Image 1 (cartoon, rainbow, N blue to C red):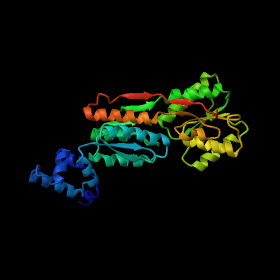
Image 2 (cartoon, helix red, strand yellow; image 1 turned 180 degrees about the vertical axis):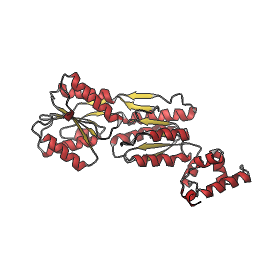
Image 3 (cartoon, rainbow, N blue to C red; image 1 turned 120 degrees about the vertical axis):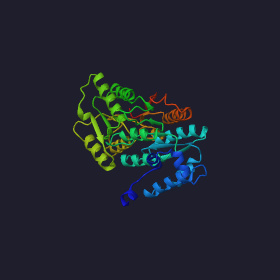
Length: 341
């Protein structure tokens, strides 16, 4: 009995063990007159056995008849995700849906915990951009199989799962950006990316490598630099590379965080941009023009990606159809050349 009390259980699992619908279990726990006394007794006894207590927050949301969607993102300080959430909200507000925002904080365990929390039936669907990490993506497939809730991925997507996605052509954008650096005179570019194997980063790296070969330069592994989460360590790594006897003459940063560090190192080492080193980055920073010199960027249509993801999810919810379940919407990025090249 003690073991049962310590076992975590949600309403879906409770209903499954009882052989009842989730709706029936929910009404029984709410002492609804629609449910017979014998059924209520069964539900209350099993709930007591597992020490199950209904989530009042979820209960209040369920009373709104399924007009909530969840959005799970890795972080909010990245300007891209802030814009994407704005795009999602612009659609959900039009359709009178509430949007619940969850942050995974780049933590796979937290991502799993959020999904577990959402299994109680309080939402109608999920929009998600996956966190970094090497934990894989099986938990999304398992969540879907348990709940049958529609899921739309955007930007950071799992490459091996068949779910609807809203993405940009990271490969082509990286290829084009690298070619621009090479045509501007670079002979020894450095591609800087996160060390985690996100599909987005892998596609950008692949575009960089193919452009090097297309330009008839010899690709070398030391043209790739993977950085972790420690800003101080990243600073020292970039500083060491730029202080070497044969430093790169261009940096192509896959993330905003890495380009900011690169600029700081160049400033501290008094390396002139773009005379000594050219810099290009995937970035949605509105402050790109305030960099000195102004930063050349490849920006993603974050707001539009959010709108497309929300529109696709609500279409699936309202039509109660998964005919669009394998849709992949690809939007174009925009390269803006400024003074850093």
